[in-house]
Length: 210
Image (cartoon, rainbow, N blue to C red; front, side, top):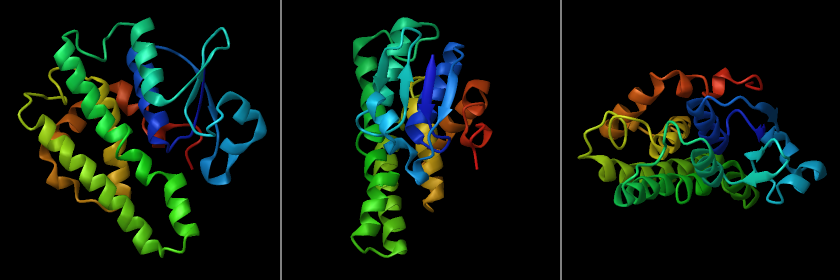
């Protein structure tokens, strides 16, 4: 398999964690987002959105969108599972993940921040926007798992929720968010980062890290 990504991309980070947890080896093909390499014609034939990640399986079939990729990996390589068996718990994990992957990350990603700069917003306002988006999403997630026993977001093993949480907390810190306001999320992050699958997927450990 081949994973097209970028070391600092939160969506790529999620998929790297999933691959590591599943014990799968892939060829990593970096596309430098700040240099616009994701808009190259050859890449757009793979992913018409011009976003990362993109996964090519061994047959050459192309998958896009991190949550879709992760769920495909979970269905085709079911051990260890990233979603609970119970339908209600599975829905709760998906909801948590979507708060971050669908409603938080997209409004503070590189593409949106670049557009805000194009519209003339000063840098402090752009950074403030990103910080606000992260605080809103993380506050909701803190409430969602406040009474979950842990140590991970939803119990004793990592799930899709943790795969989305760890990269988003990294984003929040980059935008100056005081993450101490989210103690339950920090507990889950600490448990996750103690696992090699999460540690090895970290941006600073990627070969294309700047």
